[in-house]
Image (cartoon, rainbow, N blue to C red):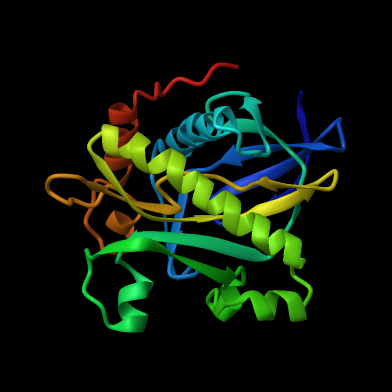
Amino acid sequence: MQKRAELYSGKAKTVYTTEDPEHLVLEFRDDTSAFDGEKVERLARKGAVNNRFNGFIMERLQAAGIPTHFERLLGEREALVKRLDMLPVECVIRNISAGSLCRRLGVAEGLDLEPPVFEFFLKNDALHDPMINDSHILTFGWATAAEIRRMKELTREVNGVLQPLFREAGLLLVDYKLEFGRFRGELLLGDEFSPDGCRLWDAKTREKLDKDRFRQGLGSVVESYEEVARRLGIGMTASS
């Protein structure tokens, strides 16, 4: 299946239509941004690493019974996905305290959170992705009550699959965000799962191996992504 017209260009991915109106091509670019687009750079190899990483994770989730939009890799930087009607909310699970949770609540970084914290955020860069709750989502029509329940259920199921996967690779899944969309009346996991949208620490040293290396100017961003991929056994050559 071939990409046709550009449909949308985000901060790190470009979306293209195909000859099938129900499918799209995701192109992972080397662009990297933080702080709602205030810090932007291009990092060589990042697009290819994230494409392959995302494909590996999506296939693992599908094998565990979690419905996703992912179909298959098309090449080094491209993947074929189902075309979803995306919901404008982000679902976040926090297994260890870090990032905005620490800033908002004044808690120390690195606390084990049991049970994990679940949060909703509105996907809106102009408003800096504000935190929202079920009531906001229902009142403003961003999702139905059934969809809210399903998003929470699927987000927690993802945690149950990925936490042990990363743990076996000597990694801590600190937190992550997910996005969902509608396809033929069903809610599917959309967007991507890569070190751009989660926090991953070395289990022994707690060294950061995710996008915080870019946010905090720690360097070796792509090299850290590649290290995570290596530990998970992800090959970096996509089949076409």
